[in-house]
Image 1 (tube, rainbow, N blue to C red):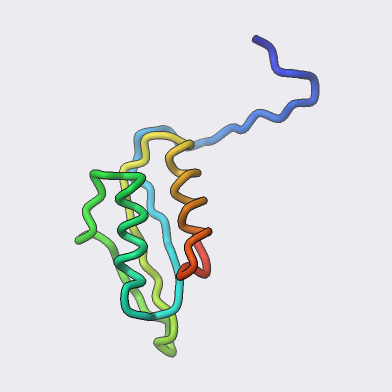
Image 2: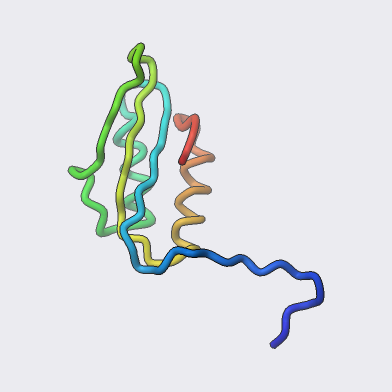
Length: 94
């Protein structure tokens, strides 16, 4: 089936499956890291929360949580990104 003229196709240079790090930043409050790992686990059930890396901001007001999970598809990564960016505790997702 051919694409419609002018239609854009999404291409990626990532080869799946792969290890995929995602960094999530939010206010340094109780439950933030747990909320992030809960969302990641919904999309990547084999993710080990013990492997999450946490780094506070220089003034200690914010926390960055980096979760490296096994990504199996672009759809999985997109769904995880959408859920994280819509979470009320999350400020930035990279």
